[in-house]
Image (cartoon, rainbow, N blue to C red; front, top):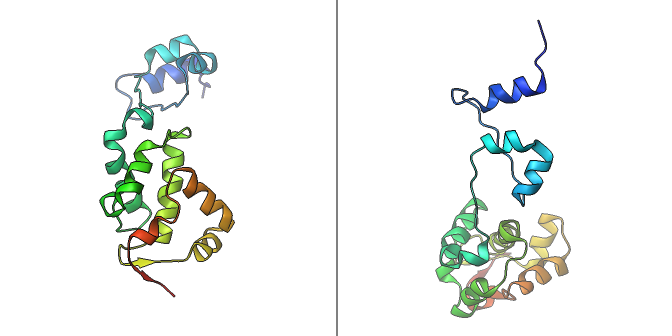
Length: 155
């Protein structure tokens, strides 16, 4: 059996009738061209995902979906007005990854709107330092967000 050249392989997977699509993620198109070549990038479908800081109207819905992924029934509208404003006011320099990390911590602390876990328990369960959890939440303005929920603390 003859081996496929790299260009033949790329032609095959980039063809219109191929069932599998190549997905590449790059911070800039210039970097994608440098890594994959002009021809390959030219044949790819480009999808621009706007940074979170430009999608603030969608932030509550995105955050709610992430909370659900992390198994919490808490939703953004159940946070205090101050904490909701803090989420929208944060610049999100690390974009989606940062929001996902925050959702992970929030979901671990508040699995349901009527129950909370201590940050120490959460940090231990997640294998991170307690101050790391506090600092991350504080960096986006969610310091002690659970105090405004008036919920029962889990043992």
